[in-house]
Length: 419
Image (cartoon, rainbow, N blue to C red; front, side, top):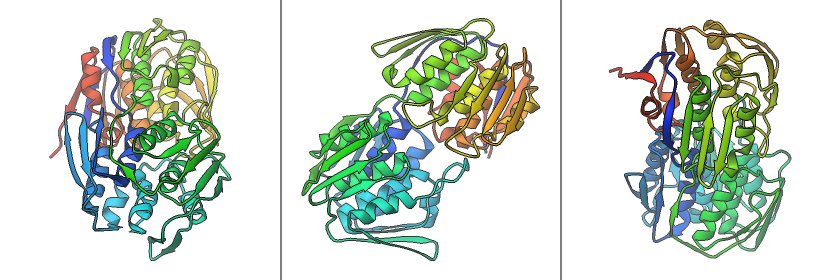
């Protein structure tokens, strides 16, 4: 497994283009199974999760070509409705295939999805939604077996907000007979992006981005050409890295509107942030101040995917702060490594109490999950001395060449390849 070697202390500055959104492209790739004639998806990041999804789709019989950020996908030769345990376990988002495969093939068999160990992420709401649409689903011998005739629209009322289950239900309902109404739907920008893609293929989806989504089922959908929105979490991570080093940056192709909950926290930390059009300019002070109290919540609340990065900022800010993690119970795995670097953090259940220190110190670290790994990179960038971050493969799941992006801003970071 590769390792990052980082010499801290360099002030990051310059400009950086934001890549396509991981959390948008994965469900879009799954949905492309439903478009006759094939689709072209542009602005796709070269993430290990994207390559994992491509491998899964190819195993069903799809023809896929991925070059220079463009994925051409043809689903006309789908023959296999069973995904191996090995492929499913490589990617949490593999669960997105349940809805499209049922809608197209009338069956789907697979093992359980994998992903980062950040807490319990059951698939019961995915199953609940698809059963309402008419699917017969069994969970036996460590596998999920699904069958259906043509799916039928219905009312889906989620007991709790779930991004993945909302997206699965939207995709399945797009080819169901009749009308489907999804209540207590997730409101993330990536949900609205999936609506745009489905409608580009000829679906009738309305209300994405609100708590109620209505889908009028179509008999078939056609392939289309579509460009994926920029990644708000990647953009937030770069801003956090620049802020930690007292730097200055201009982000281009940035999702300004969708990042208001992130830029608000950076302003509370003393950064000057200005967003206009598709540009975000930020200049950080020499010493950040604590953002105070932050709690993660479903969108439009503060995103759990940025919690670890902001924890790192609080560790080097003036004053004390508190983070309340409401989404995943294992999102504080980064804390022991930050403490190893000299941070003052106390964890009590879903709360992290942080007293800012003037300096962190380089150490040997290990990424335990995707966003936590990015947070350790930020810590190493502003620390005194050298750090080594192992298990970089987890960071690759959500960032396309993060080391090169940071190096272009002036970071002293090297990737050590392991045989």
